[in-house]
Amino acid sequence: MSDSRTEALAKILVGYSTEVKADEVVSIDGESAAAPLLLAVYEEVLKAGAHPVLNVALDGQIAAYFKHASDEQLEWISPFAEWMVDNADVRIAIGASTNTRELSGVAPERQTLRQSVTGDLMARAMKRSAQGDFRWCYTLYPTSAYASEAEMSLADYEDFYYGACLAGNGDPLSAWKQASAETVRLAEWIEGHEEVRVTAPGTDIKLGIAGRKFIPCDGRHNMPDGEFFTGPVEDSVEGEVSFHLPAVIGGREVSGVRLRFEAGVVGGTVHMAVGTSYPESGGVNESAVHTDLVCDLRLGGKLEVDGVVMQEDGRFVV
Image (cartoon, rainbow, N blue to C red):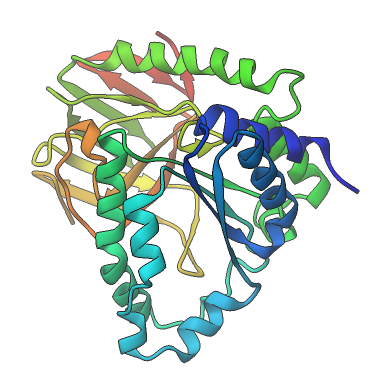
């Protein structure tokens, strides 16, 4: 039985997030469990007059790849992937894992090798995106695996996820335009300041933001969305941050992460990404990874900008 929210989400991804236009080449990538959404997106791209290219990963494919591929095969880049990064106008990617821990038995060194090889593809895609030559968006399709991670039933997780995507709204495209206005307002408020300080249990960290651009995230690149971000001045980060919420990275759950920064070097919510900066933010960090970690500020947390409280207990107060 089809879910009207799946069709609404496809309309959001094609008509709002990436604004697909006639004659554009659109790469649609996803896992086989996302078939209903992949097909709905495919249809919307055709209705827009564009040229969809569908790339679907089979269930168990990635686990088989890391189990059997030699180092030489791990270092090989598909000519198709090269072509898509350099020539596609739009990429819509849909995660739909049926087993979030399927890579837990893969040696981290093998995953790191593959990440280092594909790092150049990511850098080229991010450069084209910053220049306005490439548009992309990533989303999920609700699966039992994701519901299990969230400790929800699949039905409850579907309600939660589609609600966050505003897919149940009678006019989802207009709803996202309204949400965008608030995100833009907050990004404009913080830009032009000198320093951000984040405090919470186990966290007290300062980041210099002078001269950096804040990017409002309003569903154009991630769905759902609602953050605004920048790349802090590279040698300005000082202090310690504790990430309270677990993350599954490479098939392994990572929890209790605590990082101490000195002059920018490691040693409701706010999340920080370790790795490659988005060029359009003014950041210049280069890395084969871009890993997001979440620090929960809803219970006693505070975010200050040049000494002025911007967010407290997970709520914006400006």
